[in-house]
Length: 328
View 1 (cartoon, rainbow, N blue to C red):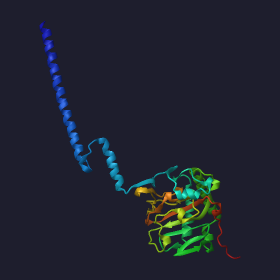
View 2 (cartoon, rainbow, N blue to C red):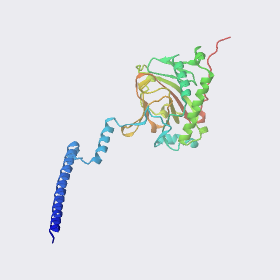
View 3 (cartoon, one colour):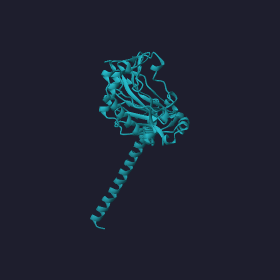
View 4 (cartoon, helix red, strand yellow):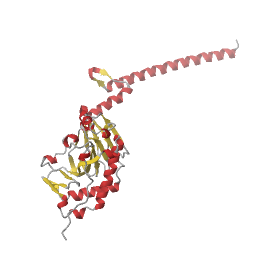
């Protein structure tokens, strides 16, 4: 073997020894890193029974469950800042609702539930309806925190009772036939949306009473009519109701605080709709949709309730402008 060959072979052996030594160092470092990671996660979170959660993949679900319980099981169907073309949340129809609705087979919904739509009623139409509400309610108003105006019957909250707004001379100065035409346009849009979303013919659901504007403030309640925050079922309060809708006329978080709409579901889950100007919320009126409105903390909340029945005998006509005229 030549001198050069011996020298080359020696260098190759030395190189292989260095590579082995480097691999051993890297393996030791890797083992230390893994051990440190285990210790880090081991000390970060412990579960009941002293079971230790240290796997990163399990960390996020655990924190999510913790956060969910801290907000009292609140989930959002619609937040104020969202703009929703349509969002539906299905719920099982209650037996009482199915039993009653079975009298009107063409009116039974494909599925019970809740729907929110933000592009159904235009901003111009909403502005007109808000003007009707503010101008009309300013002619009366409850002594407590909740006032209503029903354009069909003329009922207007006044003090601790009600008056007929159409008997007031001022009514003809704040209402006109164009306002009532806009009301009818908005009502018809909502009626068709209810029919489409719940899978029933639009000519098989009818406007029913009461249909009313509401104004809510943080003034203390004076009568039971002012206590709007109690959980209830619309079908129990108003027998003719089969589909309830709400059109919000101003904004939660801007025009008022509190006043969110809450569905009270099983296991203490609260499903929330935050009012947004022009937002329409619609739902089946049975006990599958127990609900309430939070107390308004500040500001003034305006909304329009428009409800529909399957019972033709409970139908009402669209409200018409009928302010008392001065004698000639």
